[in-house]
Length: 78
Image 1 (cartoon, rainbow, N blue to C red):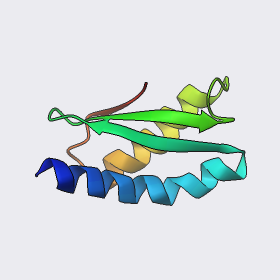
Image 2 (tube, one colour):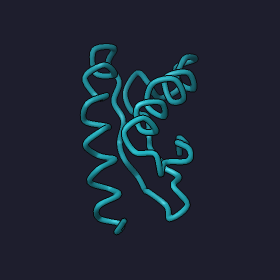
Image 3 (spheres, rainbow, N blue to C red):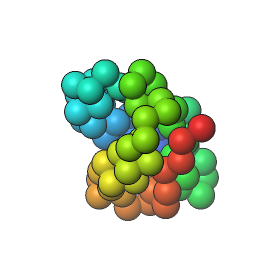
Image 4 (cartoon, rainbow, N blue to C red):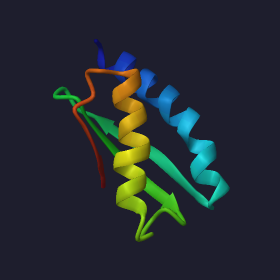
């Protein structure tokens, strides 16, 4: 899969997750998709620094990305 295809597919999934985050005053921004399947994101708004942000990252964002794109190996916040 080309880098552009990776980014587009990941962005589509993030766009589906985004409304859930925005309801609580947060957001997520795609930073990078690496060749090894790592998706780097930045949590914004109320998600940044929230005590529950790691759970949101792993149980929400990462779960949805892995479900839609099996090549995703992990999601990290930068």
